Length: 636
Image: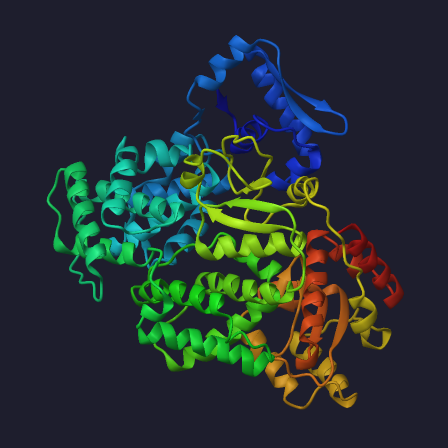
């Protein structure tokens, strides 16, 4: 079956094996329930000739109803095919980027417009985003009269850009035509899949499924580029262990056979860097002697202890996790290898306090090192710090149900999922964490039930499938297996008050706002004179907009004498970097009340999940604001 658009293909896949309500489908697809109903109607029209329909069962959701099983089996056994013509602007941008990266000749927008049945003006408007995308990798497009447009840049940049784009598309839809038909040589990814895994097994190199898939994508890209006559320039890797060198040598032979061309030493050296930057370290922390790694771990933990009065220096698990992650991170930043972090925005929203602590520590460290640590890398570090805080925060809870966690993402993501589950359901005892491959090899499951990040085979125990950041619906499904108590939203009464609440209707700049609020807090004795410049410095590093027009300005470190939240509602909006803030919470947090500050951040995350910004913004008084906040908490 050919789906007219990607969303219908996703909807069809979602409803194959489970019944889902409109609200959950709308959340997963980021559309309205009205759009979901329209898409279901469109799907049913497509499936009318295949003996199946999606039927709405009141109280349960949409369910697959098969009238003619033989017709339906013919449908599902056919390979999924999608139109190779991009139908919307994001798809066109992706197609254009791939065309520029893989074309040996100049491209003319007129030719592409005719091929894709759109106007030249439409493609011209898409080109702004295409140029922005390519500029991230120092790639440029030059236009020559009567010849068209051609891409210029280094071969390393071309491969990095193409691999990152294909990786992004793989996460969204592994059957995307750009992956299966456009960007890579036919059959190469499939041939690489088994051979690379066997190579890593022989060389005793451990990778997560995601890392192995990324390297496989890079190798497939390398095969195409090398086969078309685009080798890498001179390059030399340093400080690579013997196992990585041997794996790179074997993979080079595989690529050479698939590309049918000899490979230079630079290709093998660059493969070494890719493997070294993604392998999972299995050595004990005491055996890792790289000075930079140990120094950065100690610096971050000491900075948090000094500036936030939270001692994580004795957390051996956190120290080990940070050390193993930073060892490969240093390799990546040294060679400017960028690993996308698709969970970055979610990390900021779910671990805002840990994010700010880590950002402050890394920014301070940056003054003493030549390395530039990207926001994506900081996000991975935040997961470790956040999990360390969660471990301490959840001490004392009883965990009765025994759970098997099946997860094949990175170590930091595993820790984050485990911590989130324990925060939501502290009764849970996660007895072990295994990969999908290890799960399939089990004869039986001894735990009470299984929590997995992907669909798995049935082993006679209840299974709950969750996303890396579980949705409310998924948590409700898990709640059917676990009894959980909810905490009372006491923090509103303790840290919010009418004297630190104001509605600003007149135009005001961000600097004026900071100055006004900080002066009042200083007069009242909540903060000292160094608080205001610290708030300005923190804002200059990275914007404190949490999302949905909600901003959380605060100082670098816990500098308040007493904790208070100053609430500002700005119906007209206040310019906040590249965004506009309508609901602003200036946080003044003291070291003695850090634990309560964690609860404050949970409140802000709740506002985001409940999409409460418009209701909060339109409040006319502190009483109205508090009523909206309490309503959000009661439904969370």
